[in-house]
Length: 320
Image (cartoon, rainbow, N blue to C red; front, side, top):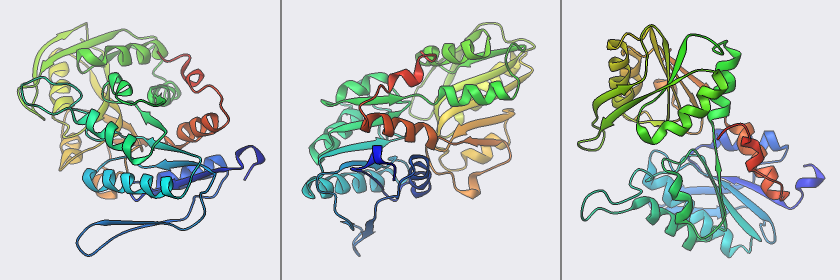
C-alpha cells in the first residue's frame, strides 16, 4: 500500500466481488477480509475478519440483482463496521437499487429511493458514492455528502477512440429527462441531438409518442442510465429506424438486463449495446452485440480523492 492511502481500508460485499478486486488493484491496496454468508433460513451473516478500528472504510456494493439480498447485505455490513469503531464509513454504490420510484406520481405510491437512503443512513453510512443515479434529486435524500459520478466520459472516450467524432451521427435521448446526458455526449462527439418523447402506461411498458430531431440517414447513438428489460430502447430503436436512421447503437451505464433482455437486444434492430461493468453480467447474458467498459478506474480515482480530501467534481469538468 502506498503511504498516502495508509489508514484506508476497502471492503466488498457479494454483489460484485470482481469489481471490488479491480478497484483494489487500481488503488494498489489489498481488498479487506470479510465473510458474508447466510443462515439456514436465509438471514445474512457478516463477520469482519480484520480490525477496522479508526480506519477510513469504503464498502463497494451495487444493490443489483438479487436486489433485496444485496441491499440487506449492505445494511448488515454497515452495522458491523459501525460497531467495529471505523472512523468513517463510505458506501460506494455503483448501482442504486429502488431508484426508479423517486417521487409520487399516483396516489398511495411509496418513494423507495428515499426509503433506501434512510436505511443506509440509519445503518451507519457517513458518505455515499453513486454512479449515474436514475434521478439527480436522489442526492438530496441523504443528510450526508453524496459524490455523484458519471460514466458518460468513459462511454464517450470509447466512441471517440472508435472514430465516431465529426461523423454523420446523432445522439439520442430516450426520454426528456435524459436530455442533459445526451447533450454532454453530443458535445464530446461534435454531433446534434434528438429526443424520443414517450409515456409509460405501467412499469416496464412504454409508448413512443414522438421523435424530435432529424435522424434520417444517420447513425443514432442512444444514451441512457440503465437498460432493464430492453423494451424501451428496442421500441425507441425501431421508431428511429422507421424514421430513416441508418443504424441505432445503445449506450448505458447500468446493464440490468432482466430476464431474457440480452437475447431480445441480440434479436432486435439495435446494432450494439455499450455498457459499463457497474453490475456483474453473467456469461450467459454476454451476447455478441454487448460491449462492456471497465468502471473500476473511475471508482478507484474517486475513492483516492475522497480519502485525500481532493476534489471529485473536477473529474467531470468537461461533462456537464
